[in-house]
Length: 107
Figure 1: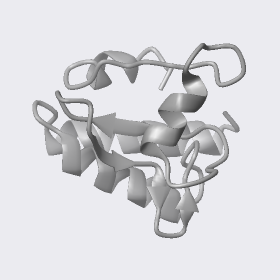
Figure 2: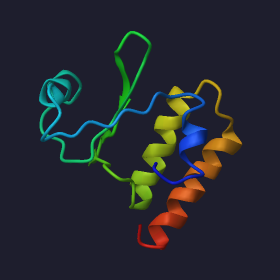
Figure 3: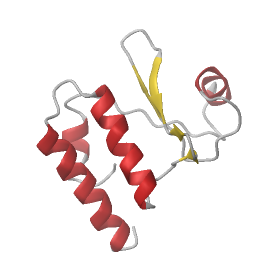
Figure 4: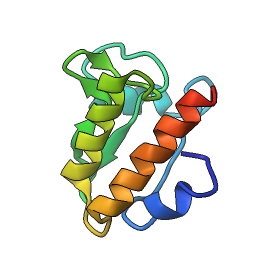
């Protein structure tokens, strides 16, 4: 999500917030509020305007973290489709393609 071509697209719909789990005051409380048990890192959630989790990276098969495996990438796409407001299907396809390309390149 830190790629130059990804962040501006995501920022059309989302406020991106990164917490340092070890150093950020309250990070553990946030995890406890949204995660259903230990998830591993990275773990993320899409919240609505009232602070409720709409969908999290806790897929039925476990935390997708940084989506790498095909099933993780597919679940991330479902997450984006679930929460999109301004993103188009073409935007989401481009984000997924960027993720797949980054995974192939090893980063």
